[in-house]
Length: 131
Image 1 (cartoon, rainbow, N blue to C red):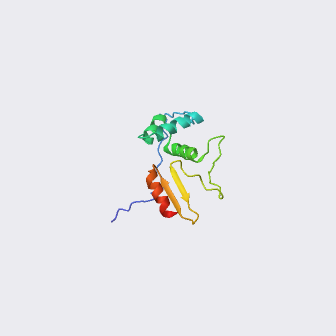
Image 2 (image 1 turned 180 degrees about the vertical axis):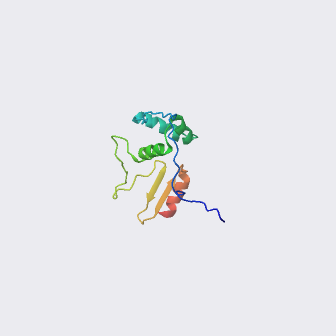
Image 3 (image 1 turned 135 degrees about the horizontal axis):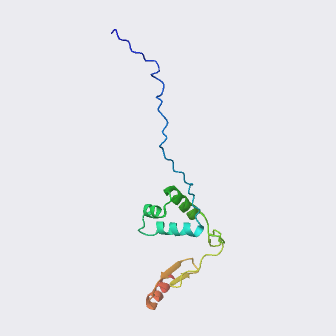
């Protein structure tokens, strides 16, 4: 190979002429501020039975991450003016029996619990047997 090619500058980027006919469109960045009522409306639509959250997200033009962030906040936050309450039965007092239940405890410690409608003759026979 008698012809030697020069590779000088092979690793330098190509330079092109500046484009003067380029059009740049400058527009303000749109950052929407959503009210609490709007957020609640969007979440209710997205969480309704049979609703597809992706459709609601597209309809309102919000990102899926924003929708799911709102949903997480709504599900973990307690409504204003309310506090979390857990109802517990006091340790010393057992709850009263339901209205359709009869409980009988004999002096010997035998307990009879009858729920629902009771035939008086059957109840009499049971009590005679245990007393």
